[in-house]
Amino acid sequence: MDELSPRIENLLRTLAPQVLGVLARRSGDFAAAEDAVQEALLAAAGHWPRDGVPDNPRGWLLQTAHRRWTDQVRSGAARRHREETAVRLEPPPGDPVPAEDDTLTLVFLCCHPALAPASAIPLTLRAVGGLTTAEIAAAFLVPEATMAQRISRAKERIRASGASFRLPPPQERTELLRSVRHVLYLLFNEGYAASSGPALHRVDLSDEAIRLARLLRGAVPSDAETAGLLALMLLTDARRAARATPDGRLVPLAEQDRSQWDRQRIAEGSALLADAIARRAVGEYQLQAAIAALHDEAPTADATDWPQILALYGLLEQMTGNPVVTLNRAVATAMARGPSEGLSVLESAAAALKGNHHVDAVRAHLLELSGEREAAAAHYAAAAARATSLPERDHLTKKAAQLRSASRQ
Image (cartoon, rainbow, N blue to C red; front, top):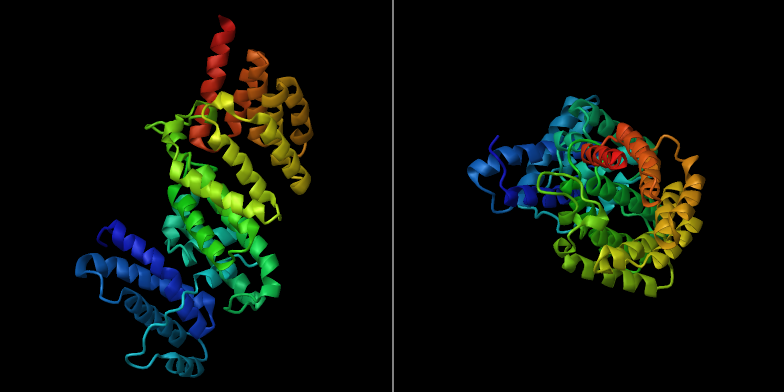
């Protein structure tokens, strides 16, 4: 297969959900349609770099995917009935490709409540993002066969649930919208701060999450929490360029070169947040976005408005009851009121997050602020031993070594 140019790769990823939407709507079988579209994408990746992009790339993909789908139904049981179905679905010669874009319908279907996030995220990436199973497996650091099984099981669960290929009506959309936002939030987080492996971030995952959040907001422009989610992504992703050195080493927020932050993204995220808050329906993503905005607006780390950040974490903790929020509130408390108070807050989160290396990392940071170097070094080392992200592990190990060296002097 010839190497794909960025233009062709972006075109395929844009067209993939559009073609899948048409075929899934025609056939009524999302799982089979998704398999057929993946084969069509592979065919395009083989032909287009060599033969050139066709005049109607969307039509080419749809025709190829339809042929693959027809091959699938003809090879199965009840051949006569399925062939009749295939003939019925065959578009007449010259039939134009439908103009409607079913991407949002696909997002809702892939984020069906029957699926856990571990299944919904890969399925969304494949069906909506146009990524191959191999690409998704590489992003999640699992074998391709494992990821293929995970995606296959996800499609079977959707089939078993009886979900139809349609955009949920308004009365059903509220609960599904919550699931969609949650999956996109997790997808962004995994891209922005990879949970394991050699890379600090997975740009393809965070970019795809932002793209899908934009689509979602376009479909529900009056939903304040969806706007808040997109604002959170933009305000956080704006720091991407400063988060690592050229050789991949992690740079903590307080040490980042803020001139590298993307001011255009910060401005867009801030405007979205202001519009969302004005609707007076404040939710957890808006609160997180407001915290991110306070960090982004500070000209230096010392100028950060920690009292305001602490107040926002307090509201967020009341709203969610999430111990990870309490962990972050401990840091904000230390910065606003002193490390001893921060350590007291940390105790309330430690039991709920037992075994999570971030507890040791935060404890180490607060002990370091207190001047307890040896104790801080021990907790940095303990956090490093459990960290699965290599850049994070290296950073924590380095911190432990620096403090041990300083305590000997």
